[in-house]
Image 1: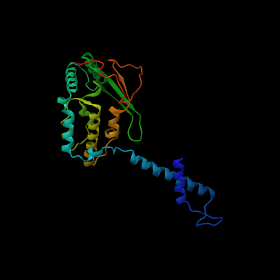
Image 2: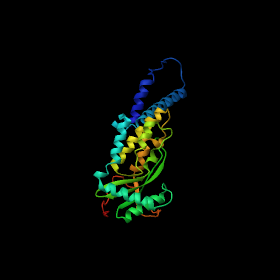
Image 3: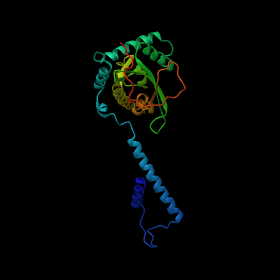
Image 4: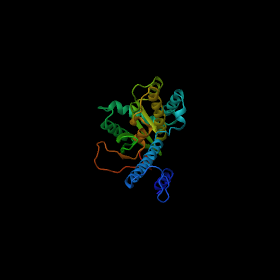
Length: 263
């Protein structure tokens, strides 16, 4: 109804008003007037569609967009290096490092992640495999992603091996490459820390590619990257993937945290 009213107002501004049989210039047939009206409506809808597209962009970076690279690197180092203040995070990291040495195969495969998850469960952690899935829209293509999480003490930790690979881009500028250099091989962090990291890295990606006069691909934009870890997900604890669906749930839903003790 709102769009119809806006169209009516717009049409009223652009269509000349006629009284009786007077004409304001060239003559038009009824069919031509109908075509003009149709073109006006189409033009109005296209114009507003472009406005919506300009709103639905990755412009949610906030203050991070204005940080220079030295500030960005400092933030990353804080996220990566706070093990001294979170002993649970440190214990998870150590167990993942041991599992990495014990588990063979393709490190990026789903099977490898499930074996690492199983190893964590054997060591007493409430670990699981989380799979996100998203549909294609006008911002980015469809896709899915799997990662490991651990619930402990009311907190949810995201576990990634070689997280740096998720942020690799073509022809990075030196400043951007220096950010990748501080990434640890085994990454463990709370959800809010990973979310801040993703936003920070996506602003840096946009800046690097703009400097190189390159277009930022949809799969390296903030919206797409956020979808990997923060979309609705299905969590399983099976070592072997199952076809039985247990439904997707919001990433911030309530779990039975700390059901197993790791130390």
